[in-house]
Picture 1 (cartoon, rainbow, N blue to C red):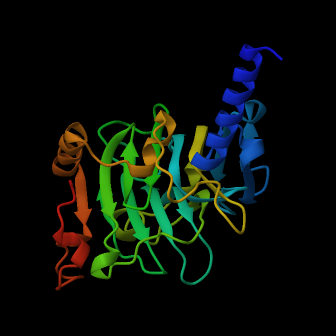
Picture 2 (picture 1 turned 30 degrees about the horizontal axis):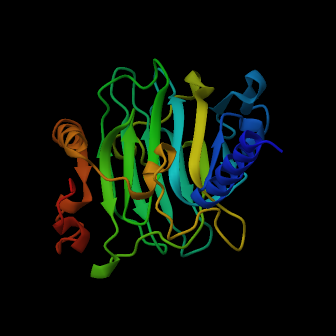
Length: 294
């Protein structure tokens, strides 16, 4: 065997080893990565050879899907185009969740509105079954006209919510202060489209107009650069520091540009923050005492 051939084999072996240690990347095909959970094939449709998925809602049922795999830390990206027109009463979701009464969950929920009025992006973080950490935003674009990328970065230090790679929210790991943080429950990716007109639009004052049904949301370009949970262990080594570009999520934080962007979003587009809701929380939750921009 020539020296060049031996070198090639060594490099290939190192690449395979690094992939196993640093995690795994799933991309693209909805047939390969997801199962329909409710609504049936007539409402949840995988199209274009698995490259696109649509969810529909009518008066009889909504629809949803979930990932075949579980993940324990990672970056999850999904491109979505939300229900157009009069979407009042509808909720479209994209989130991570474990199972059980003490579950962990990281939420994007998109609350519909009457035609011409903005969607509300509802975010929340559950840990050990406890949520009540809502922050809500309007968007700086119409999310029904084109696909936009919604991302969750989840590492041991923090959770970052991003829209088109612009951070809108950071939730830090503050277990040292007694604040639960999702660290040990593997989660699946979920999405759904359902009727929630008892609360979703203007506190439930505006009901779903079923004459506009079916309501349809679209998904494409799913990507999970994440640690896959096999039932007993993760595909990532917890003590490994990933220096490769696609592993930047493992210690991702906000740089100066990111801090400027999140300040812009939260000053211009935030419409609710549990940290400032003194009626619900007369005592400020401990995680709210840290700057959300750090």
